[in-house]
Image 1 (cartoon, rainbow, N blue to C red):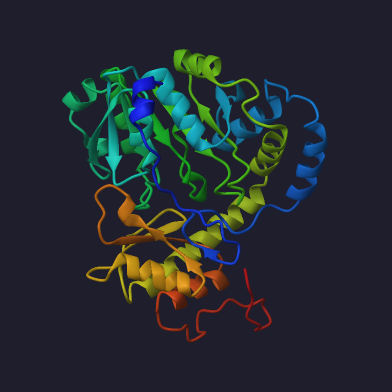
Image 2 (cartoon, rainbow, N blue to C red):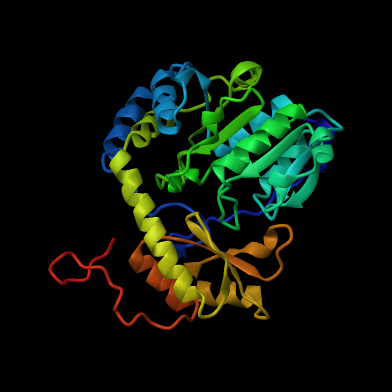
Amino acid sequence: MNPDAVRAGKRVPHGGETDRDVLDFSANTTPSVPDGVDAVYEDALEAARRYPDDEYPEFRAAAGEFVGCDPDRVIPTPGGLAAIRLAMEITLESGDEALVPVPSFGEYAREVELQGASPRFVSHDEILTADDDDLESCALAVVCTPNNPTGEAADPDELAAFADRCADADTTLLVDEAFLGFTDLPSATRLEAANVIVARSLTKLFGLPGLRAGFAVATGDRRDALETARRAWSLGTPAARVGAYCLRQDAFVRETRDRVARERERLRDRLDERFDVAPSDAPYLLCDVGDRSVDDVVATARADGVAIRDATTFRGLDSHIRVAVKDRVANDRLLAALGVSENDGSDAETDGHGTATRE
């Protein structure tokens, strides 16, 4: 990290609501956690009276199983953002350039700049077809799949072809898969390419953003560099044990994917009554509010007890909000707060006996 860049840098805005009385649609986390997490956490808290095993064998094994790679390729990190920073720390030097998608996660450009490097911005939907000249002049290229905040996932074959082009240009490819667990698409870890680093976050899919658990996956020299550079005891014992437990909850993952897909389409259909809503593979929807004031839309929803994300903080967006996809009851509160017409009940889910149910 470049000291001068750190002094000149600044933090970037994020979603997330600290007021527990407000329903938070500004952060893209699932509203439920797997059964049994409380007991695992309680046991881990007692075990936290000692330092964790810095090898993290159980966490690596569970993470490897989850994304389909050898556990030795897994590098434990305290959240997906820590994996992103670690990848940039071992890749970028002062004066380098990095290919960064826009609009996308604001931390990419910030982390590039903290290394003393410069982001070269390219539209998120054009990054996989970036010119070879651009790749050859950049030490790093970043792909977010599904992209945040637009929501579309990269085609796996197109991503593999881009990884090959990056390899030819001697460019490291960082693939941020923070939200890929909400889809059934394969991880880029399957490529086993020496120039590819994958960053994963556990806490969004499993509803535990405050736990701070994630990992990077790489191979060859980049894997070795990540392992050497990662902080000692990079995961606390509760994060490591709860993380390993959650990664093995296959039924929870399937149910969460099904619910998000179902509710996302229902929300999109309803929100289209007022806004221009982008297609999405992710647990969130990007909405263009048109000539309405974004500030007014956000403030009106909050007055009704619902926090939504002002997406104008993303580079290149000036009339957008982003909303998470939660469970049916919460989603109906969001729709009401945004002034969308009330549901006539025709799409209510039932418990099999004709009684409407919550998810």
